[in-house]
Length: 441
Ligand code: NDP
Ligand code: 2IT
Image (cartoon, rainbow, N blue to C red; front, side):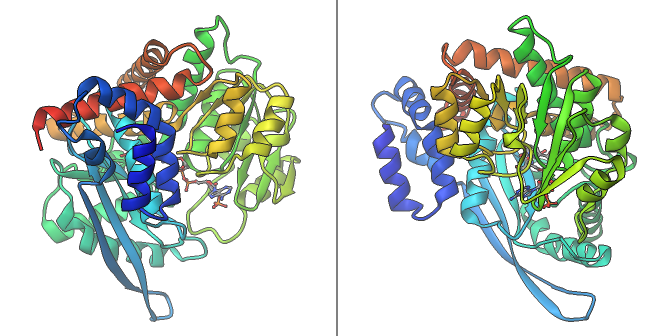
């Protein structure tokens, strides 16, 4: 399948799924190349098999709000590719959740999970439920209602969900409790659990820490280091805050955080103490980031993003398509040296092309944010062996995995600014497609 055949296939069989198209088209040259290598005569039908999820489950989530009224949301699990291992990937609770968004996330997850070197297939799921402004009890009831259906589709050797936007440690606790009460099984069916009931140390920190370890590898490769570098971070959730913590620990100056209402700018650099004061619950209706800015005397710019602040490194850690072509031009004008994606697909296709054309290296989420799912994979090993691990052990393994992913991109990605995109896609696809080919149709 060549790039134009891939595009035609998407138009015919996944019409209107814009985010899914964007993610696949970014990888199209690599899909074409790897398939040509593994299946030169098209005998194995790898292209079409790659682009159609193995299973797309949609379900009704009915629950009662605090006023006793019934609310109904749409729940999903996209089991995209199980060739490499049990389906694995996060659950997202956000009003923007739909089939296109989940298919793009699950497609990227397939390559990301393959890159970790662990036996993980790919899935993604969630619901179009907005936790914002909901009470804790409402979110808990929603989690129970969601698991009442999801439980029949998952299992420790079948499909192991985790968190994503709107789903953190507290939601995983409620989801796990519901699963255990429904099935009577205390098994590793979710990752990101509390450490008191089978969770891995450092899973909450893993995506943000792993992102910074990846950036360190990038800099080391150029005889450079994070100490003294200025960093822009978007988002103020799980990935953003732990990336900020680790970057500060490594001597970088973190100038920004952001959320869907605006941007905190702190030109002196945020401190670890200031970050500790930021506690974000998914139900928060107020604005914890603005409150932090007021507390530490930093500026909060309404409706702004970090991308017009001058810095060395940009780490978009909020959501898809949050950094557009104009933002990319501004970053380039301000002398940015690296964009590394903590979020999944935060750069639009045009932003990506603009950065690459200007020679700015771009580390895609499927490589740079793989630390989260990697530690999820370690949590699965811990649960299967029933042997607890220490934070030190997990941190050492996380660093090693991020180092290997960086090296894989360098080895397989060519010499251009798109080295990390090409390398991550090529290595990830090669593993997934080889596993599919070996297992037959
Ligand atoms: P959280 O829900 O913890 O935080 C999300 C943050 O992004 C919040 O600060 C939110 O602000 C902000 N945000 C959401 N939408 C927008 C928007 N349209 N514009 C600006 N800011 C926005 O999610 P995570 O930190 O877990 O996830 C962030 C990204 O990282 C996602 O792309 C996710 O897929 C990816 N990721 C997450 C992993 C994990 O382990 N959690 C692993 C790998 C990738 P507000 O509160 O105002 O909505
Ligand atoms: O996008 C991602 O890699 C995640 N949300 C984490 C998935 C996981 O299973 O830990």
